[in-house]
Length: 203
Length: 129
Image (cartoon, rainbow over all chains, first blue to last red; front, side, top):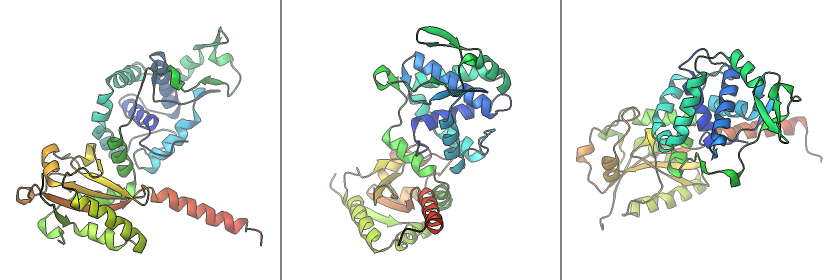
């Protein structure tokens, strides 16, 4: 269970939500399918970090973990709606402030950007269909996702031993994100920093 | 570097500090002493992004965080103007100044939520006498 917005997978999901906003209306399916496609691409290159487990749902690949993490982002005030996710103005600005963190892992950033570019004009419905039609290998056999039983695990997080690289959050960034992901703390700091003059100091 | 630090307390920091109870105040004092006597300016985490130029130091596990800045370091790394621009009195501050800005409590919402749920559960399912 994710406990903090500063977890790599939440930050990657946050970036995906931000990226999807540039295209057609974002809905929960589009987010789920984009995260699934991004996870596949990352696993192909042996990159860990997104780490969601995807199940076969009637609407295509779906990860319950994404809904949990959406809840975390909503509680932080960065995302406004659970099913049709949308960044709040605060979330948009916060995402911008994380550019340096994403830029530090150029390969992951480029990979996400490529996936986002490929889905940006697709609707949630068409992505549902195309992911349903995808084939995965089970016991050496190619099987269409659509033909799998409900809630069959389609994709596991990449095992530690198979990881060549990983999207990690350095300690200083983790600390910053943890502080700013608490709405009350953010407001408190903003009010303190709004206007600082000499008279604000008691000694 | 062998110069002692000049400490300035923001009024919001003082308010946060005064609101701490006895045992927390003691823990905060220990951290503050470390910050105030640390002439190598290496205490806490160097914050990034919106909080560039600031540092944080934890006490009571990671529940409470002192947000502070070393003026010398803050001038060197700069600030994120979208969140906070430079202090207007910055040129007057000497390099050996340290500013204590706030004490923030981390994750209070989750803990409060846990307390509310446990209270409700205890009411619904009282423990056996």
